[in-house]
Image (cartoon, rainbow, N blue to C red; front, side, top):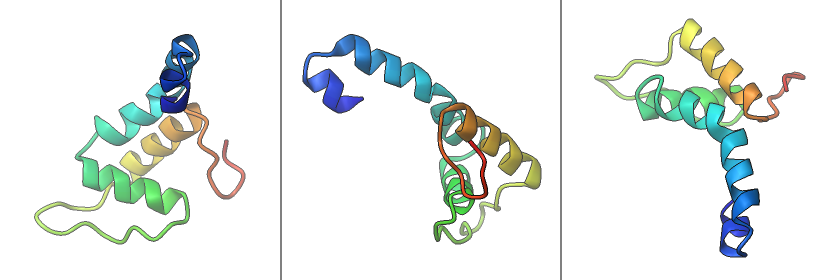
Length: 82
């Protein structure tokens, strides 16, 4: 997206941005950023660990919504999702 924008391909950058909106919404707005980011890392099979207090890890419902958002944004998750 940024490469396209910097190369003057603003329309292409906007298209990529719009395709990624579900990812932005899922990771940045549905719950606190560290909670969502660590949950997303877990969904991707990457080491994210748990959050530190006073935060709590994402609930199963939040993780499933995040999975839906990531898949809608084209993120390929381990296990065949996306």
